[in-house]
Image (cartoon, rainbow, N blue to C red; front, side, top):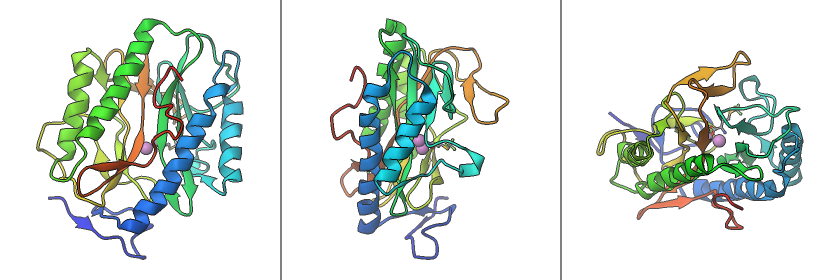
Amino acid sequence: MTTYVTPTAEIATVRTSAIKLHGEDGFAGMRKAGRLAAEILDAVVPLVQPGAVTSDIDDFIRNMMLEAGAVPATLGYHGYQYSCCISLNNVICHGMPGDKALREGDILNIDVTPLVDGWHGDTSRMYLVGDVPIKARRLVDVTYECLMLGIEQARPGNTLGDVGHAIQTHAEKHRYGVVRDFCGHGLGRVFHDSPEVIHVGRPGTGPELRPGMIFTIEPMINAGKPGVRMLDDGWTAVTRDRTLSAQFEHSIGITETGCEIFTASPKGLHRPPY
Ligand code: MF3
Ligand code: CO
Ligand code: CO
């Protein structure tokens, strides 16, 4: 059984098993945090070039957050030491910035979460480095479509199973694998809150969506099988079969009639080519 709760001052900042139903203050907070997150993903577009070093992109993102009066929510999160995640090629998620240079033909996900006035704006997009083979571009396109098809199902009366089903159906139609080991999540004053947003599912199953719910949808789609392998660094998740992986993420809030996307690109840079 799913339970829902209206966040009070006491529970707003703690993870709860009940799903929080936020009010107008939550939506206003998420709008501001989501906008900064999306502006950052817009601003890094010209930095993604052959030869660019991913730790320089991380520095840029941290500085842009600090200049905007925000804090990178990932910095120090369970010991994570960076202001974003940069996941290249066969890396599924939580890739760590480092001294590695980007190369022509790479695809990468950049995932940012600025904390603005106590609210988390969590979003990621794929980027292409120079000329990218058609196979990789197709994976990126289908992954974006998966996210948007999931978001289309996000409205009162539907369930999280409807969201997962839409994503899974589209990915598997293209013979891609949907990662099961990581999921979307409720968020707000808490970075990772209930519910878990699973990117596969059956229609009509799982928690019912209600106005006030705020969560991410962030499908990770592998060109091959869904299997994950963790690297020894404890963070980096790669595809077990070494195929490419792609991901897009938005933070959304359920409204009376559908949903609001808090992290839409102000510049219209929704998907590559940018
Ligand atoms: N932004 C990621 C997400 O979508 C979480 C990153 S946590 C980190 O949920 F510690 F790896 F940065
Ligand atoms: Co997220
Ligand atoms: Co994220």
